[in-house]
Image (cartoon, rainbow over all chains, first blue to last red; front, side):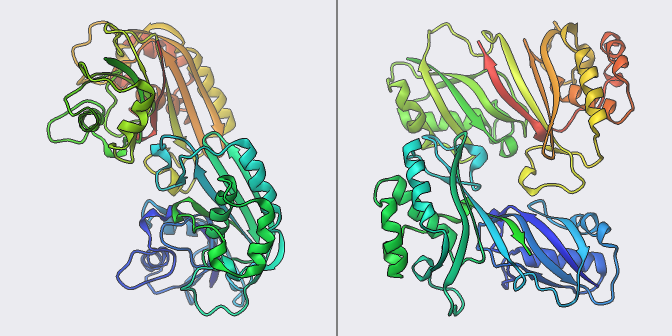
Length: 248
Length: 248
């Protein structure tokens, strides 16, 4: 039986999703909990490889447990019982054998939280990028004007960190990119058909350069077409990033 | 110079506010940070003694540093630099020598968060009481009906845990008590002129008994007037409780 399932995790204590020898990872904890439930090894496949410190409100996986059968509606409670407090499995259904949680993704949504206050908020520590310099409402308008230039299909080679697996196609389509302020928190929301290594964090770093007046919104098309990493902004820290929704 | 200041903390890592030898406390961390700023011992007085694990969105203190002078508007940044990530000082002004942050309180507001979902939310771990049994909208109406009986001036002797300092007057006035649901979270909000040891947590435990049908709203007046701790509900766990606002 193959399950499609959704998990949620606070990334702070994990070295990302993917199993790495000797390190605590989401996949490692899931495999260990599933072993306790099924009494056998299960194969867990994820929808993406989140980095160390990155969070997920909704991360999709498949679980392949051979002949083992637990009704899918019982799986969340059964598995979560064996999971640590920073990870839960909250939804499961059965799926076809040929469904793939990464290859079958149609679009993904990330949110990035920036804690914009002079003094940090202890409740947001590790859950948002603490950015104490004031970001005005005018700056947020400018960020949104800059954001509009990212929309559509572009070669985002310049918005990729080195160290990814050998990626040959660096063309991605962005469907939505917006910046909104709530109390003390600025949230960047982006939806696209896929994202290169660190691409969301580099987009956020670039929007911050716009907010600080180092770049103007009109600079964005030239930066994208230059394919030059050094012209884009910094890679915003992992702790503000959340995989928020995966669409199939 | 004497300062009135507001601090905020995630209570998980603290053994409450008040200094205790060998234990990590909010007061201890504040004194240590102030020593770094002023190069001298300062006296820190708090508005209440929160228990281990209880959080504060706004906790008021006075800081007495003798002749040391730092402009109050500079104090938050100066002090927060020396504070750990789970504690910040976010507001300060000067105050008169005879102002007392505990005796001069007019009212205090607490909120209590209950995470009501079948599967726990990793982002709420340590920040809400995980209560997986479903609380229906009808149950929330019943909790609010029960809440109305707490309003006004009563002897809350039966809503106090043992182990408090010798309290002789157990009469308190509750101005507001309400229960509201947002996504996955039920929030109890209570405002009163003062609260006995564990009083808010016992009120929450009693409201949960109403939600579960163990008590009916009409039972509340009899439970209060009985002054019998065993007739009220359990003491809800510390992790859901937040001191939210202090009024002078």
